[in-house]
Length: 267
Image 1: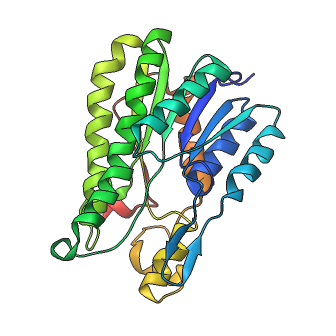
Image 2: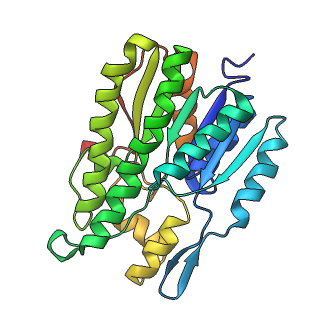
């Protein structure tokens, strides 16, 4: 029997990409879900990614695995909405065992050319959103004397990257949160880790490719620099890392940075 069966996970950015793959992987292990997503298309000039229907199709797919999936459409930048989602999870499930801080955005821009609004959006969604969500869930886990928090960082959270200074800053910030929370929460049997994927094959690549005037494949091949001959990894690879880190097999792993980079960081 899975050590995760019957547990409850709270996933931000759950509707597609890495969040969706992780939701499905956890559901297959018998984990119930609170799926949190803004559920609004991400729009570039002439290009739109994602639809509100992504949430309902996720719920349907998850519940086919024999577990419950409760949806909450909200913005991780808004404290009242995050709190309402946590309250809903407690009403429906009476506990939260796993937090996957996954909601995030990515965009290119030279540091000195970024507008203040571009900087704020990146930091507020990628970093502040993770803090806001954990701020409401940590007390729940402390009361339970158990829990797992996974912060979805990036290889950009362990190195600098051209035209991604604001993105890298947000992802390095998640490392600081991870290590600090691991220290603070260890007495309560709460483990905290971050994961650091290289480029992942998600719809976000389509939007970035549109901005660059290239295909998603060209974007992956040009930016990855992986030792292994892949332009990117799959969302399911990230999901498997999360499964390991929240399982009993990783019971002594906390405050760590789990890298899934196809060898990128060896360069």
